[in-house]
Length: 586
Ligand SMILES: *[C@@H]1O[C@H](CO)[C@@H](O)[C@H](O)[C@H]1NC(C)=O
Ligand SMILES: *[C@@H]1O[C@H](CO)[C@@H](O)[C@H](O)[C@H]1NC(C)=O
Ligand SMILES: *[C@@H]1O[C@H](CO)[C@@H](O)[C@H](O)[C@H]1NC(C)=O
Ligand SMILES: *[C@@H]1O[C@H](CO)[C@@H](O)[C@H](O)[C@H]1NC(C)=O
Ligand SMILES: *[C@@H]1O[C@H](CO)[C@@H](O)[C@H](O)[C@H]1NC(C)=O
Ligand SMILES: *[C@@H]1O[C@H](CO)[C@@H](O)[C@H](O)[C@H]1NC(C)=O
Ligand SMILES: *[C@@H]1O[C@H](CO)[C@@H](O)[C@H](O)[C@H]1NC(C)=O
Ligand SMILES: *[C@@H]1O[C@H](CO)[C@@H](O)[C@H](O)[C@H]1NC(C)=O
Ligand SMILES: *[C@@H]1O[C@H](CO)[C@@H](O)[C@H](O)[C@H]1NC(C)=O
Ligand SMILES: [Cu+2]
Image (cartoon, rainbow, N blue to C red; front, side, top):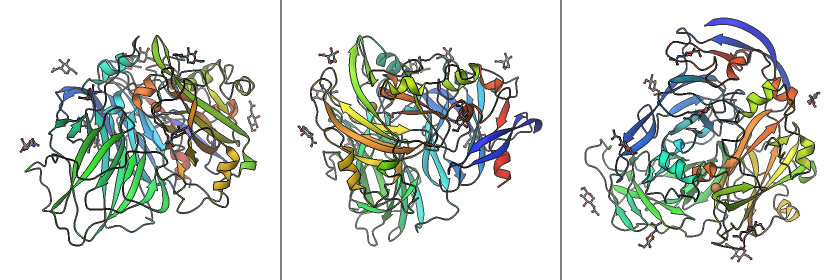
């Protein structure tokens, strides 16, 4: 590794204290060995009972290979865009605070996308305390429907006992390919993607979609009797809000939600939306009466039901020999209603003691979501959509290039419900405590949808959800003397199928302590809704704080599409090393 230059930069730690670090720029020639490599291609594959179609794959598969990191370490992950005609970014879902300024993987927000035939080196420092269940996925268009894989941060000390662990990676797939879906969603008039044709567990699945049978082979999860397993459920679906249960196994103990350990919470079934993760402890039967049990998954809050299965196998270890197929009929009965799942029931295993009281809240930002038909069908947040054609340059890049001239204005935002209409960003100050209240409203057509809202940047304290409109005092009373669990993806439920155009029906509230300077997205995680505008961009920190993390001129290579930090066959990149010096000094 060739050392080029060193310069001081400010590092704001999780606790908000400031330490001086020396970031460096380093030439990533053949002597630089990344900790992991992901190669992204576009290929035709067959999934479930569907006809072969084009998909974005990671190392030739969907889901992509499992990445395992250890808390407290710094990693470099090299991502190759081996596609010929599509841009790419990779997002480390839930690893908020762990990514260096240009490594969050959001196009038009934190970085220029990786051009075809190029690669980009992502730097991730996982602080101690962030062990848990995550995933990585492309953040461009509809690619994440297949371009995603599990990312597990291992613990130095595991707080719960279990004998073994298993990943249950949930995806969904559609009859149309991702490019056709992307075009349809921005078409005038809207051409809908269609509902999920199949739900996949670890890449396989079958059952039925809208009553039509889909007889495809199932994934098998091997277990032994009388043991305790940590099942890591990862919601990597595009659209599907999955409700699931295991035949003959009525009790699941939730111990982790979105990367944070919780006190045990018992449930007989789980709901996993796009972007959510849960770990549960499963105590296997001491004397099973069957050699296999079905895991049944069903979509919720959509016009049709897609049902799928996987196998919990107590029999001989599965060797891909005899495939298992779905049963002719459902084997368990899953609740029809979704609202309020685990709300007010998840508490941190170790309270931080840092949960701000209502008195500490400096601002409440209300985000009212609404679906409008303006030729195209679009999702609006406080009357504005956010799609990745606006702006035309990533925010972080613009902030550097303009020397902060076009920095989002707190004054303009204050007059406009928190959103600066010029930059189309929500600014926030470091040190603020912001309550974010999401409100669901009837669409132009009166329809209501359910939305899993995801925040980059920092996990929030989830204050819960309810029907109608939000009442801060009533809700605050529910948290008296308690600290909620922190999450990164929670549901804005629908409390009916239809209501009046613009009528508020349903809320979700979060409390966020703003500590991480940077450009962070907060958005619905349904890929269709994202493409249709259901995203917001937040700029947290003022220009000193955001740009001071790594000053010019060291960042020059990040400021143009295909710039110096993007490697290719004949060019080694130069990357800013933001964390590794710091980690070495710990
Ligand atoms: C992905 O594939 C590349 C080679 O094509 C390999 O070097 C790399 O280790 C693979 N990544 C993982 C995480 O398995
Ligand atoms: C790959 O699938 C697409 C549909 O997604 C189809 O148009 C194309 O012809 C297929 N290519 C090959 C080589 O089969
Ligand atoms: C890739 O991104 C660049 C920069 O935003 C853009 O100009 C180009 O049109 C994109 N290419 C594709 C195929 O989307
Ligand atoms: C679902 O099936 C019903 C009854 O066969 C049919 O009327 C409806 O159009 C189907 N819906 C979708 C979205 O395919
Ligand atoms: C599903 O396909 C398998 C293998 O072809 C077959 O054995 C099984 O009977 C089929 N199930 C149904 C319900 O058709
Ligand atoms: C819904 O309400 C909005 C705001 O009042 C209005 O602009 C729009 O035309 C209405 N849509 C329909 C279909 O009535
Ligand atoms: C939500 O409130 C509306 C209006 O009072 C009511 O019609 C609806 O049934 C409620 N939904 C649920 C799921 O409680
Ligand atoms: C940004 O905020 C910090 C801390 O409050 C302050 O020291 C600094 O002067 C501010 N910078 C600008 C450009 O306002
Ligand atoms: C590789 O990158 C360099 C520097 O950005 C550029 O000049 C060159 O054209 C690129 N080569 C290919 C094959 O894209
Ligand atoms: Cu949504």
